[in-house]
Structures are given as C-alpha cells and as structure tokens.
Amino acid sequence: AIHASYVAESMFPDIGRTGRDITSMFDFYRGKGYTGFESMKTLLSVTYPGRKERELLACTSLIPLLVVETGCLDSQTNKPLEYTRIMYRSDYFTYEL
Image 1 (tube, rainbow, N blue to C red):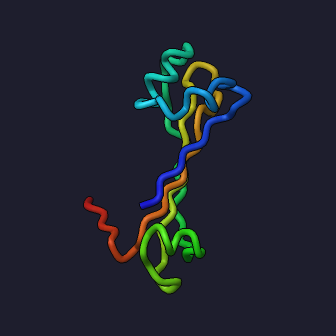
Image 2: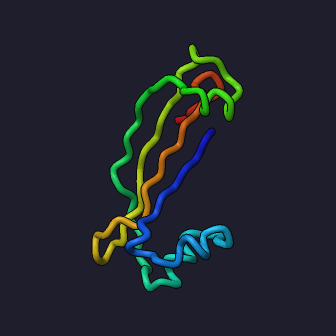
C-alpha cells in the first residue's frame, strides 16, 4: 500500500521542521493542544496506477488500486487535522468482516 497523510502548514507552522521526527501524529496533536479526535467520512474508490504507483507497488497498469480517503478532525473545534489517502493493490487486498 501507499499511505500518504497531509496536515495544513497554516495550522502547524513547524511541521516542515519537525515532521520527520514525528512518531505519532496523535502525540503531535496533543502537544499542540488538540485532545479529542474524530474520523472524517471515509470514501472508497477504484483507480488505475500511474507510473509512480506502478513503480512503488511493483504492478502493471491493468491492476486496479483501491483508494481509501479519510481524515481526522479535532472533536472540539471540528477543524480538520489531517487528510489521509491510502492506495492498495486490489490483487493483494483482503477485507475480513
């Protein structure tokens, strides 16, 4: 899978300097005064890989990717803290109910 999370530099001006040292986003948010977290609506879609995705996932252009998009909100202010996009190879993906 390819997992990418994004945070707004306008909310966290030091993210460019401290980002590589973060081991837990929730600890980072707590350190900034955010203590309650809620998940945003989750979207599931299908796409085909571009050149970069094919290289990273070692797949051909004919293997569909499952895309999960979601985010995290501060439960007190309802401000979005992060947006997350994960792309999974559909031929290696299993979901257990």
